[in-house]
Amino acid sequence: MKEDVKGKTAVVTGASSGIGLCFCRELAKRGCNLVMVSNQERELVECASEIACTHGVRTYPLYEDLTSPAAAEAILGYLDSHALRADYLINNAGIFSFRPVIETDPRKLDCFIRLHVDAVTNLSRAFALRFKESGKGRILNMSSMSCWMPMPGIAMYSATKAYIRVFSRALHYEMRDYGVSVTVACPGGIATDLFGLSEPLKKFAVAIRVLDTPDGFARKAVNKMLKGKKQYINGLLNRISIVFVASLPTPVRMLVKRKMLDKGIAR
Image 1 (tube, rainbow, N blue to C red):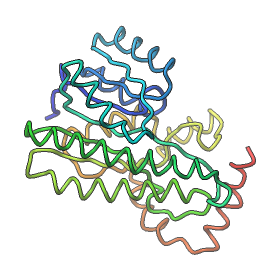
Image 2 (image 1 turned 180 degrees about the vertical axis):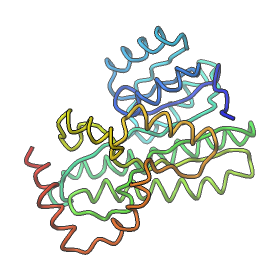
Image 3 (image 1 turned 45 degrees about the horizontal axis):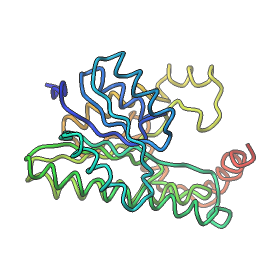
């Protein structure tokens, strides 16, 4: 039996685009009110308005830079100032780049750590404390299939996503006695523009279930969160492939880097 989210409130980061926006639309379809957090101010306001009009829920666009050390405190302050009690937190905001560490600007390296490590940790802790007081609440943190792949060219991405997975799994066990669940989603094979696939190829991959659509992934990840699952990896192929990608020999890793990642940099 699915948990009824109608009339409840979810805080979603990275809410103005991509999978974060899909999370918002999925929750809104079910009648959940939204505090939508993003650093894209114009897009955020437009998306919040569109969702409110389409689904008849209350949306609160909150422009916030999550790399700021005060971001978690600012979000809690916003909730309190609007007399809002959150029932769900989805830590979705993230960044990605095809760059070796030595070719990455130190400010970008710092951004990976602040967004994927600091922000996820601080927000998860802050909301876990509030959820503990009420004896209920659910957190969904976004990791990635890359958390099992120490792949050259995406070192910062995969390393920080690995942190999110391990942190979330441990926090899940710490919070279970308080009626609070923490789910970590490790998406792999989402039909986005990340790898530059053509639309016909993406549609074909979705049809044969090699790729998942962003909307489809968001729907299933929300369901897993509402059931209090520890972890969600979309697709049987992705779940099976974990053991293989984690043990790839060095020559194969380097081949992937040269044939795929280096081309991604060139684009």
